[in-house]
Image (cartoon, rainbow, N blue to C red; front, side, top):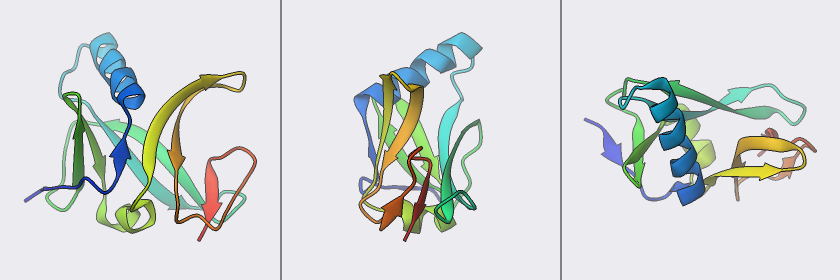
Length: 113
């Protein structure tokens, strides 16, 4: 049984970008999966992928009709975080504002606890 969690934020901008990508792919079943993996210059790194499946133990966040899913291992590192989508001089990307991160690298894609 999947659980809905409001303790991971999913911005309107991120949801809008996911919806745009779903429409471009012609697949309304796509969900944004956010995960944490070992590695990166600070110890852990964030990953983003699209997934059609939701595992029974995934955390699920709904925003503007779009679904974000997080596996249980990654969830503990993302608790209290906000998933956003930004476009700036460095490019366009999904980003994580993580209050649990003790340190982050310059690219913003890796962090330490």
